[in-house]
Amino acid sequence: MGYEYVLASLPDLKINSSAPITIEKLQELLDETMLEKDKPLLAVLQMKNDNPIVLSTLEQYRDDALSAPAWWEEAEKVLSEEDIRTAILYEYGIKSKKDFVRSWFQFNEDINNVLVATICRKHNFDVRKLIIGTNEVAEILRKNISQKDFGLGGVMSNLNEVMQIVEIDNLMEREKHLDALRFAWLEEKTRFIHFSVENVLAYYLQCEMLNRWDKLTVEEGEQIFRELVSDMKKGISL
Image (cartoon, rainbow, N blue to C red; front, side, top):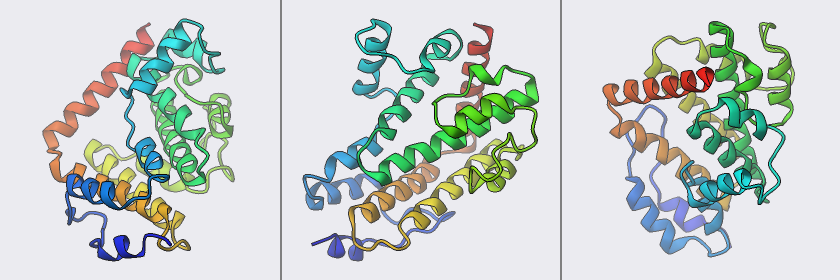
């Protein structure tokens, strides 16, 4: 038996609209209705880069208690602490046994890497030191900074949309467009799946986006972006 009753009872979500349910109420509902075996999947999607698992992994890499990934040595030299934790978070999510979870983390890592590469090219930063991950997209970005499409034509199916979005000057609008891209990706990923845990996970992620925009003011958004740019500049200085 799937999640027919739960999903049928939830209000529809539409991008650029207010959330019809708070993330807190949705969490309460899922706590009561999700199968125990599926709850860890949601927990992974809810992880932030200050999660205890991320922090523990970071310390174990630094203490050589765990074998560090290929990107680690360079990252320790140039990336901010927050960026390193984010890289570890993506790495953790991409190792999930669930295809939906793996794909979600990889999708976001690829988008962020293209955004970073665009900023690096515009400001003449060394892209090789700021790209995270070791998948095909990451490796191509490290080698093809001068190419208009970074050499990703035919590799990223949504490359044109991402490239158009990263060129938007208004920071808040750019982030809204990125969330719209994520929203559409979730819809496409679950288009031919019905009443499954994937539908529940996608609904939660979409609802989380809408709730975030309901709470986020322009001033807060600008401040968040300034902090991100500041962290990047600190990493470059190091």
